[in-house]
Length: 594
Image (cartoon, helix red, strand yellow):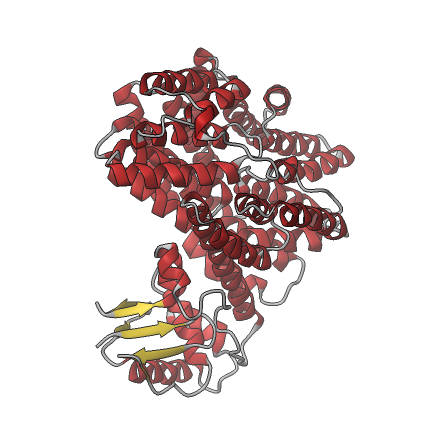
């Protein structure tokens, strides 16, 4: 029998297309959602605390609820044990699993796609459950938006802009204050020949942002009104000329000359029209440079990368398809779309077929994204694999970047000796390579190690140097790291006025462009929240709420936990119980003892 469990929208279970008898009450659905959406088995005591505290016999109420669920599920799944585990049968499909782990086509076909988790379900439950439900609804809504975005890029890359327009309009409706959706809509309208409508949409976005956010969108929105890639006739005509241009453009990007690289690679991406493999290679190279150039060009890059991926797959160029998939995974890592990150990096790994250089980079970004989510054991394993692969092929850039990522992980876990060792190595390698555009990242982290070890003067010197470097290369993420550290130094010196100014500026810097690392904004915002809560500043509740929304939407578990701990200190009902439920999932002693 084929069974479908639907938790998006109005919940229900169907067997061979026929609705199964519904369990009595609403709490069976709450229990089912808790167990299915947890990444590990759920202790029965936690379910009792969240949902049955007011029952005359809470444990008996949970047992009755589970019996209701088992009767409805039949043989479709096992729901047993303590902690309670969910084991679906081979023919059982759960819509939230498809949303989180399926393709965009599979997700968009779900009847409840775009609907909220347990929509319309009301129950008597404590504030801790309400906080959990709100956080999960945000996370699933963010995944919905990511899938709409991916679908729109796919359709735009496939040459059907009318479909991309419809998908981008749904995306803007889901996330009206996210600039990237508006930019994608404008790009899709331009591709469809709807130039007047595209200009009107750009103006509407500018008015919305000024009214709601008090700021204008980045220049990327207006740039979307202008066609970027040249027509094929403007491109280079021979295969050898295109391959030479790709090499020149890639080398220019590695040297930091992004404008030159983009100009050369745009020409390469225009031709030759009769060679799909080399055109896909050029498109992938141009997309990669736009991603890593830190200029707010990720929407254009994603369409180019989708084109490269599809073209390479069709002509059997697995190496090029792997590179395009990897770059798409990089973008999703930075955006905090971790389910899509896993999908694209997994695809890149499969297509790479043992390519050690690409293995290093895919593991590097997988480790970065898993660190963002506080999946520390998985992250450390990925980052160490990245370093090992980088050493085997002599890729010192990958080694330095993975070392900095591993240093960040050790820093978050307050393993300061280990953090110092790998961060110092990353700085040395970056210096040797002349990789100035990267250097501010490990410098900032190393200075934070100094600060935590009480070397305030050394920390200040290192952070000032990192900030100057970040400003020189124009990288908003590295600026944010350094500003955050400088704010903490000022706080350590007792200069609260300067500390507040710097800590407020740190998350703002990373918002300057729409294609920065979302976790960095949350990390900087958390430092501001900690400072504000400790000093009972009147803005503290608003900043903590902003952090909780950002972190829970992206599935950044440790930052969500820290937000809940701040809310508990501010007296928010249910925050302490919700934090306790997350502690085991995060498993970071540095937070557990905070």
